[in-house]
Length: 469
Ligand code: ACO
Image: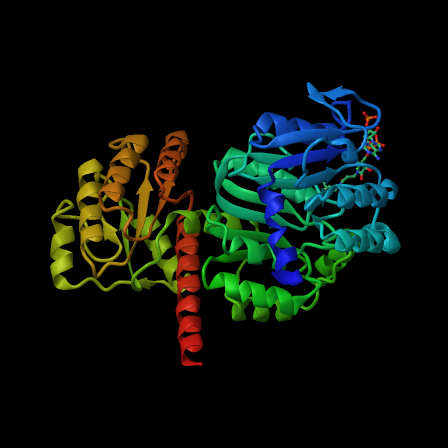
């Protein structure tokens, strides 16, 4: 194996270590080193855990070691949470111990002008072949190995979104928010100063990670744009990448410089580069996670024809406008399909697209219209809208819809939007649990479906171009 491949292969130890040492595992609850160890233990890490602290014998019922060199086992991953000035010596010991990867939590490096100290740890890591994330990070989370080596929330939900963040505090906050929103993550990586591992390294890893379906990145700036573009192009051909690139405005770019020391760079450059390599740029966190949820659940559409099924005219019009804004093709329904949809509604309904089942529509109407949409091959994607009425119990409607989507084996993309009170929130959760992304506004539902189309179109175009070469 070449040296480059060998170093690349070590990244997996960040996500699948058999053993983890927490260096600087503090005895005091509330200190970062203690909370990381507690998260690892309480989240149920499948491997072996070794706290390292010269002043402690036992922490959280685990035997504590004075130095990593005393650990009577191989150590795959070291999480280092001690003051910056002590990190080089400890990293040197990690190297001697044969540690393969590290997460350097400590702040106090390049971000505050300590460039030499940062260069020193890069040098040591290279000497021993250690790959590391950080410094200046909150850690790493990996769902399949049940590793929560962060000082973020404990009970992260497992899922298929790999979340990479250059911002620490925002990253931790978003980990918490995903739990509240019921969104599952396959991995979380805090990148911090990116002295070694960066976005490009992680894209090369996640493209082949069977637990990840979509990669979501919060980015402030890139150190090596060309490397990122190459990795992103390669990954986008297989898995979608969603990027929130902050520092879009001039003032925002200045804020980036003082936050992570990155160069936000010309926003136009990023826009063009992202488009070239298939990266989907989201404007904000809400949009990014909306799209990511759709990507994790939905199949690729087999064609452009989209049909809206609704019980409300107004929401149908809003969705129609959104389709036009986001470039989705609302299908002109042929005569025979109009006749089929007519059978699903009262005489005063509208069988054109949007298919308006009217305010009196309940389970049976939705059920029959959905079956028409799923069974006809000329329809490629479905937008299902529901305005809460007294004739429908929203959770029950979600059960009915979920049964049908299951019956048709999730064979085409379907996004839903429910508007109403608390019951609609519960009902949307039911849809989500059954693999149907649901949103509280038609625009968010349409924008998420449109993201899938944009990626599918980019991929098709790029594959054609590559074949032609
Ligand atoms: N090996 C092992 N353990 C050691 C060593 C060593 N060489 N040196 C010290 N320790 C022990 C200490 O005894 C202590 O344990 P104790 O509390 O039981 O006595 C523990 O390691 C921690 O050492 P402290 O000197 O107490 O350091 P402290 O915990 O106060 O701070 C930290 C360390 C958290 C790494 C700090 O220096 C730091 O960088 N904080 C910022 C971290 C951060 O914010 N990162 C970015 C996150 S992203 C965001 O913005 C949210």
